[in-house]
Image (cartoon, rainbow, N blue to C red):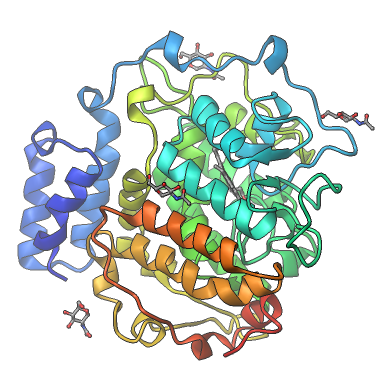
Length: 433
Ligand code: HEM
Ligand SMILES: *[C@@H]1O[C@H](CO)[C@@H](O)[C@H](O)[C@H]1NC(C)=O
Ligand SMILES: *[C@@H]1O[C@H](CO)[C@@H](O)[C@H](O)[C@H]1NC(C)=O
Ligand SMILES: *[C@@H]1O[C@H](CO)[C@@H](O)[C@H](O)[C@H]1NC(C)=O
Ligand SMILES: *[C@@H]1O[C@H](CO)[C@@H](O)[C@H](O)[C@H]1NC(C)=O
């Protein structure tokens, strides 16, 4: 690894002003990269990433008026009734429970994008991609259900069955080894698990009641090992693994943390975490009510000039992968627990990516995203009579989301490498390998 090639790029991507950092951290990075200390570069790099928290001059000053999120009046919390849809995304569930997207849980791409920006300060680029992906795989190309299958509100014209919503998107969108929601083939459902919530809460508690990026990284390593040990069909899929699993952890801090003048990047304490994950009760006697995710009163989102965009996620994701490259490893268990095999990215991509190049620049994010249109034809042919529109919308969305990242060109993948994973073949019973 030659970190000098990617470090400056990475830092500028993340919007860091190198001069704003204590020189001792920079010196450590340079020294360790010269000496090629094992793991040293990534260790120092993630110190630098975390250091941004202690460098408020790099963050827009807190602005209570612009960052306050109303939970009053038309945005009051109303729990869902039996026909309202709620699913595997705590952010979307909370948005629906406060009327930032339709309370019935069925929303258009536009509604999802504006809700995510208004409530959490998600960048338009990231929200647009996530919403289009949902509409293509789980909806009717323009809308989707954030939970189970919707009533016949959507246009069924070109759809083979009914759209399944986010809850029915296992290994297309919803995936294994998530933070709080359980693995489908381990529990028989993909609902939030109190045991998983409690483990995360405890790590935050041991960190001074603060769930930060370091806590989430540690917890993610545990969860990955748990899925390997408990879910015979564990599949770390190209998109729902590499991209969505990365987001699922990082979003918890980046979006749920409460911003303030003292903590402009946010502080995520146990009570706020409980509220966003629909958990009540006092530690350790927690109860979870799926679908009751709630925005806390007096909670403040990201500053409008600091919305969380794709380059930001790319940099955060890479910081974790440099220390734990397993998070870039498409693969899974092969039908029994503890049988995890990773696919060599060079085999999968005919050499366009390899284990070394994945850790450079934006390649990790490029890799996860470029696998989307490669996997899509098999998946979409199970959903649409004619996949033309769905595939071109998706391809255009991937192109837009990766434009400007300088991604290598991927022309095809070797899908045979995935057939040893039941998580893949179950997903794709009619796949042509
Ligand atoms: C913009 C549209 C969005 C879509 C389509 C979307 C979709 C999803 C899906 C399908 C999952 C399940 C992934 C898994 O199995 O791990 C998920 C998980 C998650 N999402 Fe979202 N999401 C969106 C926005 C947001 C926002 C704005 C937040 C802000 C808090 C958020 C926070 C999370 C978290 C924390 C998880 C992991 C839940 C857990 O297992 O603990 N998402 N999302
Ligand atoms: C449930 O709430 C929705 C609004 O989210 C409303 O349109 C619907 O009529 C309600 N259904 C029942 C059975 O109360
Ligand atoms: C967020 O932080 C502000 C400032 O410290 C505080 O007044 C408010 O109560 C906090 N909100 C939550 C939900 O903790
Ligand atoms: C990995 O990919 C890079 C960039 O394409 C290439 O320069 C390098 O030789 C490859 N390494 C291996 C071990 O194949
Ligand atoms: C991609 O960007 C172009 C140019 O802004 C836009 O016309 C197109 O609709 C976008 N594609 C998608 C799927 O959002």
